Length: 301
Image 1 (cartoon, rainbow, N blue to C red):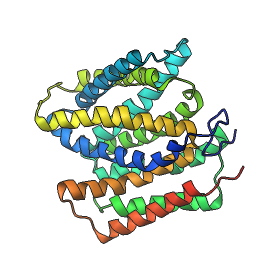
Image 2 (image 1 turned 45 degrees about the vertical axis):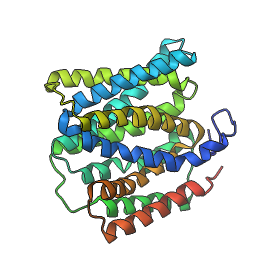
Image 3 (image 1 turned 135 degrees about the vertical axis):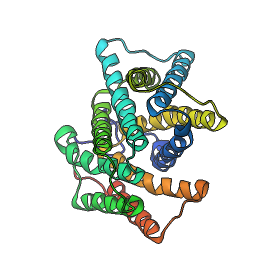
């Protein structure tokens, strides 16, 4: 099944507003790393994510009930939503949070997870029938090269378990993206999100009970970080990601993740006075050019 970027699986033309959402998605998704930096000093990673997913599930439930959203009718629909939630929320975020909390440099985690657009593009043809032309493949490689220039600092890669955790995150977000595209497109986003957040919460709650103390310091910084991650990331940005997947080719949507580390670097420069080198700036330009080649070039039909 070949899908053009502006069509749904039912060959419906995407709303005009969807076309301007990718930059908004990149900007908002990048703030998740900033929110984690603010909140993790006050709670262990599994505990932090448990509280985040619990609040997000509650808010989505309120939204779904208040708006009269349609709930799934079959076990399969509930199962599909739960699988997406566990993969894209539970495993992906848990792996990255755990790795960084246990000594994996953030740059290394970003590089491993940054392979996702290439991996997604490679799998999109056999799984979904999506095809990229030579220019688009060149854009993917260019984008990854730019990402390396932005995040790589020459540091050690950290513990082996941390690398394995980030690889698990890479696999989870890749598989979860395909699963959502293939099986989740017909679900109501509001009720499906309740199930997704609740399923992810259940997974990280078990991990928190097994391996952490569940202690939280309810400081102003933690409350702000939690509020931002729940309202902006879990509710706003993940919902937008699912919308973009529904209306676009997954290989092109995934290429947007190349832009996240450069935006995070700019955020950190503005908020935490972190140094922004000429090499990073050059990498940002190269990454942006690569993503432009992927998203602006028409795929072969």
